[in-house]
Image 1: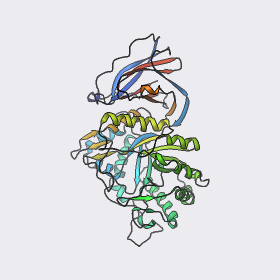
Image 2: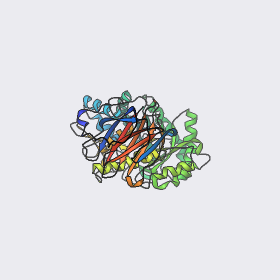
Image 3: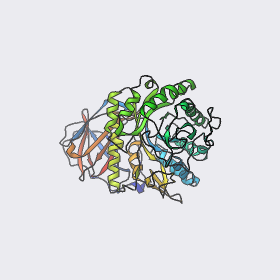
Length: 472
């Protein structure tokens, strides 16, 4: 569970908080910090005392580990076609070092969840689906179905990842159905023609089984990535909430059931600002029986939308599946605070079982790109010589993925007074270890107390920093 950072990641040590009458020391907690100045990058700090006295003069947060909420599936990013290509171009030594750093729990940051694209996205080497045939033709029995494009880079990289993270969860999302199934006859925009709902359900089944033949389990799918976004510039497909419910209840759900697939179906997969969409899909009595939950992106709206959906459908799960950083926002400190606050603390406090960023790895030109974003930032950037730059997204992920392991439960923790600009979330792992992540968004150090029953931990949270505290 505990990890020593390499020398080059160690930074200046935060001074201990001023003394108060704390009682007896009954244990210790480990701390890792990343600050906005980049002097500390997931840097291990001196351990903290746990006291048998919960009285404190400092602002405090109360944690109740017996009050448990959603189970955490994991944290990670998307292994897009572009990401897989970039990684596959590294030499064997570089590639293994990167994958170990990203996916090993002991020697790296232990990423535990990946997103795949079903066919091409705007981060692929070219446009394709798994059943591309000449214009004007149809293939109702999917005789031309092939995942050969994925066998070139995505599957080999995934198989290497499984060596470090054999239990990694995968959610897969299509950007478009094959062009012949669409009313537009094109990958760029248009909608799924209802006459092909059955064939498209079979397409998903074939995809899941084809990956299973390579030893890769697809844990979940979404019927459509960003169903409210269409463009001719790269593969996209419109799908209204009514259409999605119809496709799930008439084809996708029954097809999975008939094929004996345990793969989950997750609705929506788009921005916070249209919470009515997943609620309409989940509200369909025939469709909802096949649906595990709904997924969100953060390019519009507020993370509280997830809580809105949870309140309406408390028996359905919630997932966060995409947001990207990029050259439109390059300040490390601002990005650290925004990502930790909105995406990692924000989504988990609003019932999300995971938090995924967009591209896992991109090259120095923010690519390869395929008609979409031209200045997106990967979790890591890989140069033409194979040199890896860990971006702010890497450290944001690490503060959760390394320490909050699959199967952990989020637990109840109070909020600090808003004037302090400190946010928190707490978890308990299956091994009993306890985790609290603290974000200090203010420009001054803040000494606080974490109160658990009759015990407490005092800690001075640096200005503009995130700290992950772990104890037994």
